[in-house]
Amino acid sequence: MSLNLTAQDKATLRTAAFGAVTLLAAADAAGSPHKAATAGSLALYSSTGPIGHVLAAKTKDITLEGKSVAAIADHVLPALTAAMGLLKQQDAAEADNFRGIVLIAVEAAAVAHKGAASPTAAEMTRKITTALDAA
Image (cartoon, rainbow, N blue to C red; front, side):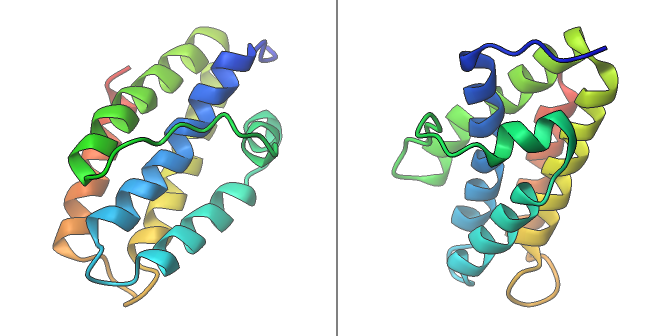
């Protein structure tokens, strides 16, 4: 089965994936947020398949608004659930691929500066995983 994604669907996928990395970087601001963001983004850009093409597209449709971690989470966590829901409707294998890609990026971001996730990063990872699995 192939994916038939609208422009809005693709924007949701990008917002969800890059938003998850942004949440990790913001949640561990006392560490090295720029290293976390770089490691997570590189992991997303390294993904393959139809999802990899969506995430690698050079667009300006990623919307990550908020001046606090809570405000960003209010936007990103529902986007993660929505992304999984729309992918599950079209292709369960691609939904699993997306989930795996996001979790690898989150792990890369979480361990970017010290080699181990901080308690704050671990808790944010749990919230991201919960949002992915809620669909």
